[in-house]
Picture 1 (tube, one colour):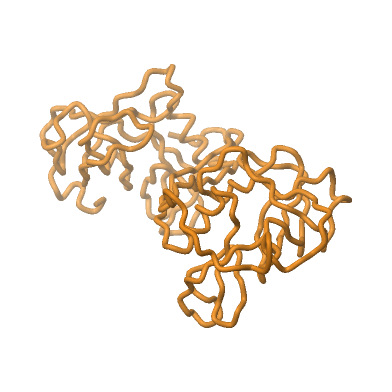
Picture 2 (cartoon, one colour):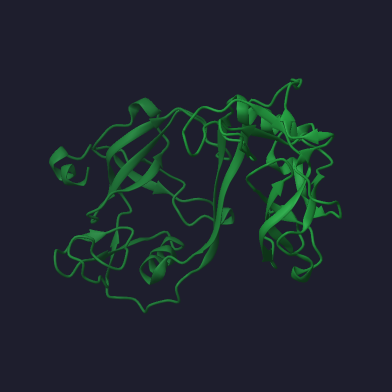
Length: 327
């Protein structure tokens, strides 16, 4: 194929998200359970400092810490930054300040949001208090935010100095699940834009290196071996050979595929790089290296450009020597 006119590079928002599960030790368990019960807790170090949020080991001496203390729901802003455009999932939907707050009775500061009408209403040294969430489950979000407070600074929890936490909570929080999320805009570049445009027509297009003559699929715009630009487009496939594979036994979230199923590296005819795809139309325990396969394209209404899966063609298996360099 001769080089096609360079299309305008595609660009689209992309979200990468997965649930992160963490079990809690006694210190973090007490801290989050305390937030659920509207009791802010810290931990006391060997030299008498009170750390909020609490940690399990002294950051200076590495000594294990276990002495929990109760601190006040009021505190002082030690520094701040204004957030004029909150993002989804942040503590407040309207502009707010990110603040470090040293709660009364603590020696370190806690990061959270301050509800304020504007940056002119925020200053270092201002007094604030916790605004508790209406529904609390044992997470940092049990503090909905901080709000301005007119009380005088003091170094005590309600009713006295920061005092030992000597009561147990019912049903302590022992673990948390948090969604780790990254939102950004992705542009695949001109080479992959041409690749994606071809997929919309049920074609797979790679690019040939002018030096080593290898055809790379998907193309990246440059040869990873020679470091030179690639421009010559080459249509490959649609059939290919399974070079290696794995059997998936864990059901993925939001993926409506029954387990077990097979994911394989597939060397399309004419390509010098294997791509991956799901193998269907055959029992998982009959998939093998060298099996010849072809793409099954999705219904156009699905919005997907990629083959839904690959199925056996019925051809004889490829000889190992034909694909051993593509493993």
